[in-house]
Length: 194
Length: 194
Image (cartoon, rainbow over all chains, first blue to last red; front, side, top):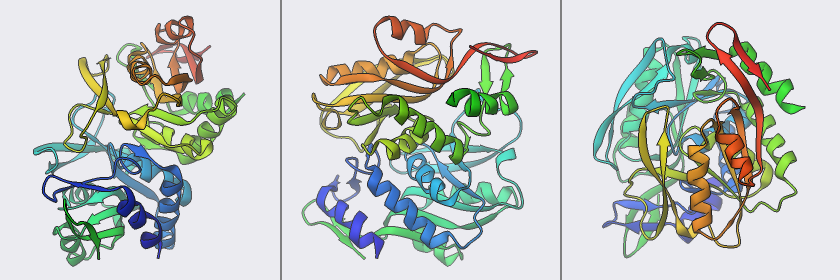
């Protein structure tokens, strides 16, 4: 199994649980400093999992999803699109939007994708670094479905499986694959995997 | 020459000049939808340019620099760090900060990097998608120099060479390499390269 060998080991070795078990810091290798050998292995694993699904596009959300989505995109040989947060001058024309509740930052924000980059025939794989309550993935799914495209599934690096997001999405029929699934975590005992 | 063959051609074919020559939209292949074959070629070119410089780390800034920095990082086989904008709960401990003026968004924002990820012995290559007035690169340089590390130079995809940022940095002694250098651009005549 990929996750056990690489990402789980790395989380065990370098992950730090903070704020009474609510925050997992993995910023030495995943979402501030990024280890490219680990990233390449994760991209290859997403391709192993979803490479047979006829994926035409990867979709992620700024900022910390962009790196893993790009490295995965090199394995899939398809374009990578990232949903932008908030307003920007550089998008004109029609856009798809969705509202996302950030629990980390305690605020609601808008994400958007230019309509031209998701077409009805697209088979879209969602990629992100973390899955907890599922708000970001739900926003991305809402955008893909507005476009009349197909959500092939989602590949995430770390799932906080003790939070309801992943299973709620699975119950709706989406294929969600996580490379490391955390069963529980605490400041004292660290991380336990599923 | 790389730039002429790939990125310049792509800008000629798909770039759109907007707002009286002040904005170049390249979001079909560079900074909203990202073309992974182009990205891989750009990453390889940065490695050809700087691969002999003993680079130990790549440093970029969220959000649109992360993709090209990661793909370049696969060529350099070194970790990639991205400077974060604004506050986040997930960083604790000591950080380096710098102020950056965003002309695109008309605001001043703070960027930060955790101190542990840039050490005095590091030889840091800066990577970004755009160089215009040079504010983002100046902020990144300020962070690297606070750490007592060495700035090897900067690799950027597109330089708006009619703006002063690139040459001001070169005059200070930094090696700045751009894969496409725009001499002038206008809504009517499009883009002319150096």
